[in-house]
Length: 73
Image 1 (cartoon, one colour):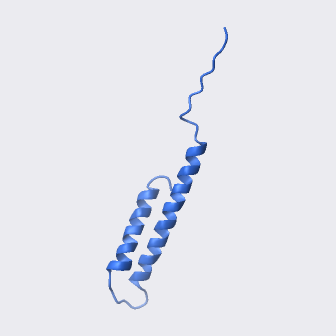
Image 2 (spheres, rainbow, N blue to C red):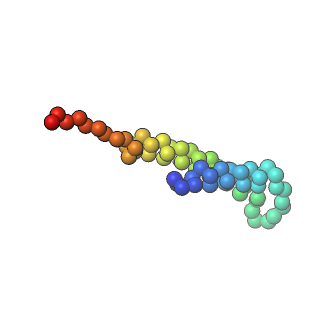
Image 3 (cartoon, rainbow, N blue to C red):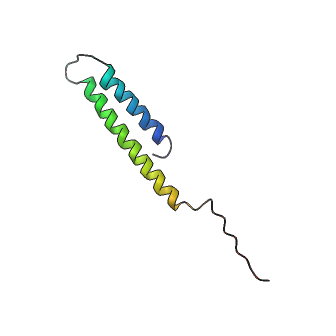
C-alpha cells in the first residue's frame, strides 16, 4: 500500500461519493448507491491503513541517519 496508497484511496472515496450521492439509476439486482457506499468505506479504510503504515515505517527507518564516531589516535 505504500505506492499510491493515499492516491488510490482518495480515488475510491471520490468515485464512491459520486455513485452514492450524484447517480440515480434504477437497476434490478444491485444498487449503484450501495456500490458507492462500499467504495466510500473501502477508501476510508485504505486512507487509515496507509497513514498507519507510513507512520510505523517512518519511526523505525534509520536509513537517513549518519553516525559519526570519534576515535582517539
